[in-house]
Amino acid sequence: MSKLKYFTDYFKSLNFRLMLLFALFGIIPGILLCFGMLNSYEKRAISLRSSEISSHAKILGNQIISNDYLNQPDSSQINAQLEQLSTIYDGRIMIIDGRFRILKDTYKLDEHKTIISEEVIKSFYGEEITKYDKQNRYIELALPLYEPLRDETEEIQEVAGVMLVSVSTDGISLNEQYLRRNATVMVLAGVFAVLVLGILSALRLVHPFHKMAGKIEEIQAGYGEDELNVNDYTETAKICDTFNRLLGRMKVLDDSRQEFVSNVSHELKTPLTSMKVLADSINSMGDAPVELYKEFMADIGNEVERETKIINDLLSLVKMDKSAGDLNISNVNINELLEQILKRLQPIAKKQDIELVLESFRPVTAEVDEVKITIAITNLIENGIKYNKKDGWVHVSLNADHQYFYLKVEDSGIGIPEDSLEHIYERFYRVDKSHSREIGGTGLGLAITRSAILMHRGAVKVFSTEGEGTIFTVRIPLKYIL
Image (cartoon, rainbow, N blue to C red):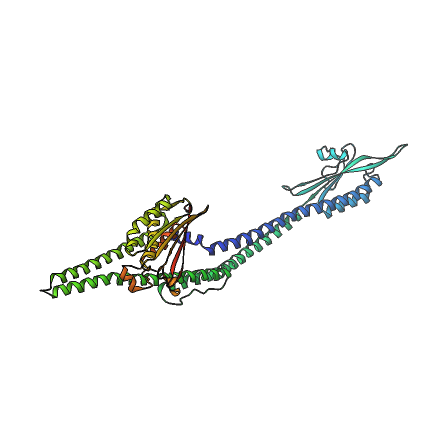
């Protein structure tokens, strides 16, 4: 086996597909969950840090206003708190007055300079700005500092300055990197564990199927048990049950085939043996009279005719065993067909003093193979004539409904014993072998009839009382069913 075919077969195998399912439902959700949690951690950490800084900055902003720091920026208490907040959050804090002048810069880089930026301007209009710069890893907050004013009617607030806070998020990034490294290790360990578990589980799950394949090979080779019994799963038990029924059916068919071959050999050999005996008898009598020669030659001719009938019936049976696709379906007038059949059989019936009666209840046209259905009906009526009593009768009736046509062939003949009814459709089966040979029966007629009816998706039933007569009923669809 080439490597390409080996891999192709493996990718098509149940084992590989089970492993793939383990990967899809075990590894991928774990990876998505892990990295989804990491991403949510960053957002959550930034949100918490922003809220925390904003709260502290607002408290400090209130103290800045209450201590008039915007006008007296030399307050040691406020400066100390600003430095402390800057140290705690590893950030930079700038206090900006109403003239956009930087009063305090904890980094001492831009004090007394003027700053004009979008965030500062928006804050002077009363808007709180929170911005996260992921690329440079810092959080920037711009908070307006409100100074209360009083007029004659109500107390109002005016933005007197802005507190600009920039805080580094390096700590959050370091934590995220640490967690990501640990998550990667955990994911790789999980992938390895799931793959190992998937391989072991897949091997365990498909083991019963391998066991089934091995036992089937043993059965095929002719050794081991005669039945397949792998009951690990409900599915394997059902497959085994179906296989055992199939195997039983195959054994029955094989036995039937062997019996059929044996019967064919016997049936073909018997006339040949008779002819050989007759021919040897003639050859051994050099001065035999002409009348004896004629008698022996007539007997040989009868045996040849019998051999011909057997061969013709066998050929008909072989044709019936072919698929229904070999049927030559056409619209046939069944009433006219029955009249033609009875007309052909009338000489045989007259010879045995049998009355033939045809009764048609309505015109019937059906989609059938005319040749095969003619053979089937002819066999039924001819059997009714051959296995009848002197001065008996055969009654043929035809009826139909919207779906089927029904044919009944009833005779006043010798009947069929009850224990033989289930065997009459078997090939070469004869109820009365001596009488069958006397009238030239081959034992294949009813087998041919049943095959032809089944090919038309029909059904045939028999009812008989020994010594009183037999009734065959046939049901065939008006429209051929594919």
